[in-house]
Image 1 (spheres, rainbow, N blue to C red):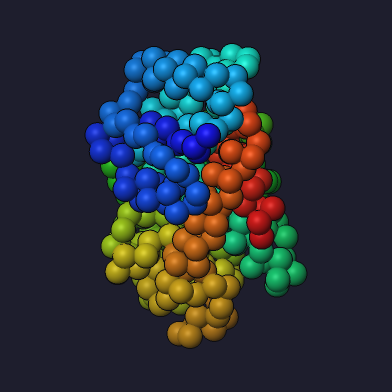
Image 2: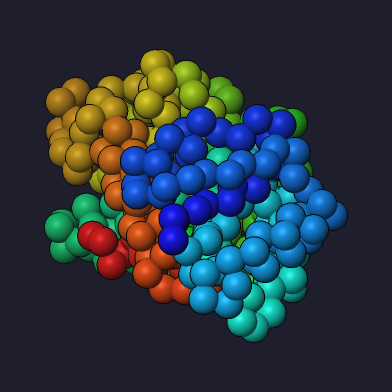
Length: 298
């Protein structure tokens, strides 16, 4: 039977990135549906689990994506509730790449610190752009591991990161996330938010510099920076997007991981997820499971 991926997206037009990536990862057919919500997902799930029968469903996987992070989570929960034995399809959840990108970033950072003889759970992090899809996932993964994380944002999103900090701390049962309550859009407040952290991560939108070099050069405790923005201007001034755990030429005491290095690893993760989804029927890959895969691939 053909390998079919049913792509349920919250966006009106499902991402060409995920469609093309699926084909290049060995999927024979991608059936994609846009504008999906938790309410409409159930009927789609029911329609996809029956046609190929109990033996054929292992050749069908579900990919849940789109830019509406919260709705993606709700769709995933709807899928779980709709499946029943033996009609359970392997499912991957990755809201606009947030789960794979955040997993790649944290895994790469942990590996780079390990090469320096440092336990990644024992250092302090500042996440610039913490309210976004990737930022909130990175913050969760680090805090869950036991690390202390300061999350920051611009003025309109301060309440969002305060709520995020409360939610993550409650979920993990530890007070590990601190919401920096000043807008991190000026050099002096960025410096204040990052001053006590050894690792600075930028998870902002494409083409926006969140950490100017003038600020970075003043961060005496900083030993590592990482960025997910591959669109110029980059998220961290002075860090090349191709850098892969290499000292910054302009500031050799700081090691950097650029967006392209993280992106290459992210692609390896998604490729492996698609492979495992077909090889391991009835599997489910949410953020925690995807991070586990990322760590296995290091």
